[in-house]
Image 1 (cartoon, rainbow, N blue to C red):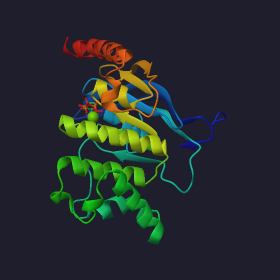
Image 2 (cartoon, helix red, strand yellow; image 1 turned 90 degrees about the horizontal axis):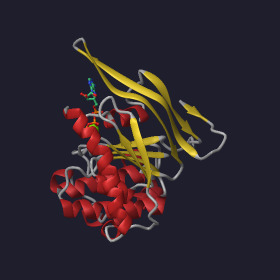
Image 3 (cartoon, helix red, strand yellow; image 1 turned 90 degrees about the vertical axis):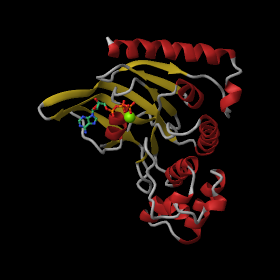
Length: 264
Ligand SMILES: Nc1ncnc2c1ncn2[C@@H]1O[C@H](COP(=O)(O)OP(=O)(O)OP(=O)(O)O)[C@@H](O)[C@H]1O
Ligand SMILES: [Mg+2]
């Protein structure tokens, strides 16, 4: 559902969103009464225990699932751009397409072609360090490079809102840090509205303008923590800030209570 908000600043309004699944006669309530505004140009990070409904939330935001109750309202979207783009927990690039074709995919579907298409793909090949691999197929790339293709494709498609579901979860620590820095750079350049799901407290605090902490299932919003570090940011540089450790501890305590209650 699309609507015009008076204040023009909320890109996404999530209102009393709940979702239950029924499987073989068993009802699972994944999400309960989630209300949140995501602002234009905001990087909104979401953390929560495993199984608390984070992926379900993103699927509802993307319109891939229908809510049991509540609603998702998109504000002020251009008719010429996709409303949202989902970058999945698992790699989801097309194995039969080259890197170039993967990045061009969404743009081509929207009718972008010729020099304009070439320029955009070239730009995102450049900023994700994939220029030398433009004609490689996914099976010829490392895991980190495939993840880069996914990120490049999503940003190149220029959606109004980028929904990212643990895009770096499967990467080793070094590659993850490099990609997080790349994501920071691309985001600082494009200022997309992003909803970013992660298990990693470090990742949430380093990338986000706010960190939304969810409860154990059924997922509700437990707390919203503002992150006031300036930008541009660098992952490892942030670790030197005294406030960084305090924030990590604060979010950890909130999450710890939830993880422990899920085991009780
Ligand atoms: N299509 C479905 N049918 C039935 N149950 C589902 C379906 N999708 C999700 N669930 C259930 O909803 C709950 C939340 O799942 P979800 O994938 O949203 O969790 P998550 O927070 O993303 O977990 P993780 O951190 O492990 O990725 C789980 O109990 C899951 O089994
Ligand atoms: Mg998930």
